[in-house]
Image (cartoon, rainbow, N blue to C red):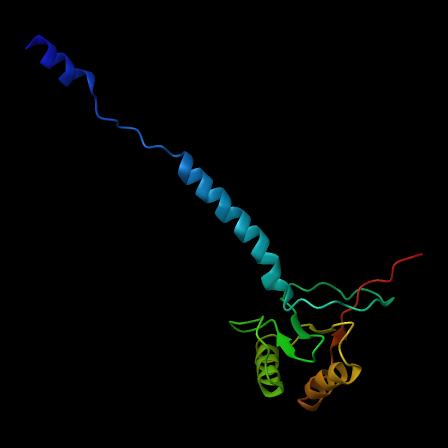
Length: 145
């Protein structure tokens, strides 16, 4: 009987919470957010041509980035799906809506270096026909050799 009582008192319920797995999960989430956040701000990724030009002044308002990929598809960094191609009408509608909220917003066009020249000009023309005249082209700075 004495042995039976000793076994009962030897096992104590564990009252501690192991926080190590929670820390691991938080670190993984932190890394995921650190990687995806810059992608959301940039818009669709295209390979830019090089050119020597002065940088555009930074603005507090997030600029509108219109991207033209190597196949000539249009993307805009506004809306719920910035990595989905849009039609020219949708592009114009979203850019005009953004301009109404923020008249001084920068509108930037970036065309892939392998994109057909006419497709980039077409994107500029579509915006120009909608009354949007102030926009800039994004290029990579030229490398000095």
